[in-house]
Image 1: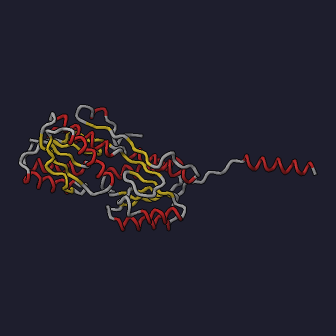
Image 2 (image 1 turned 180 degrees about the horizontal axis):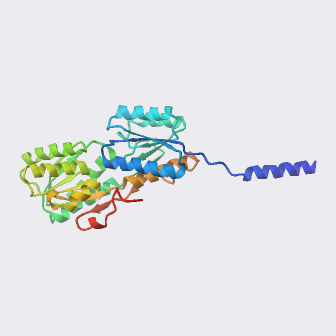
Image 3 (image 1 turned 45 degrees about the vertical axis):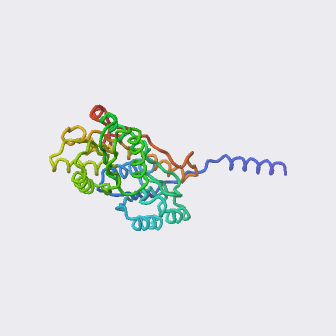
Length: 311
């Protein structure tokens, strides 16, 4: 009897000590704003590269929401139906996606946010967008010595854009000599939208000293509007640090002088790692991680390692 009890005890000890087999990350669904924007293609590249380090046979499906809420909700449901392990989500809306996220989680799918945040996500990795807007507009204040007329080219009311404008306003409002002429015109976060808004603002306000665009495409559009109007009496700052704006900052004729650079590839890498940890029962220490941006200017552009740099 004693020998049987001893054997049972030893068997139990071995069973307890046996390692738990890790769950394999096999399928990831990615929904981003637009695959025509290099920011989102960098996210897609980062997800796929990091996921294949974990499992070379992983299947990564990338789709674009085109900033359409109903379309993104359908994408989430389609990912769940396809049996993905993790959804990497660039949320169109911070609150309205809550029900779709809950459906995914109820089906055992983890939802990790990148760039934007949405209620209920298991983890979020995004730029500190308040800091990005603040450093970009502090550059304006410093360059103008605290005196001048500024316009803000706004964008879609997603969390990152709202935060960038908040940070910009915080910097500009500290300088009593700065006058904000306009801050509510939506350039749609696009080159065409920035072009159209800037054309209208130049007609409405003959004297402009600086422009803050909420992202690089809208700022590049504003620069194009300047050139078409043969204007060179103001300069532009931005947020993103995209390859296009790197080249623009190197070219004095574009009048884009600074951009608070994000790191979409790093966001994606962290999202995949967090998703794999969640799949294996390890929750992050905090739900939201803010990544500090870097302000790139003509003075430091030669040292900047951008979105296209090797990893």
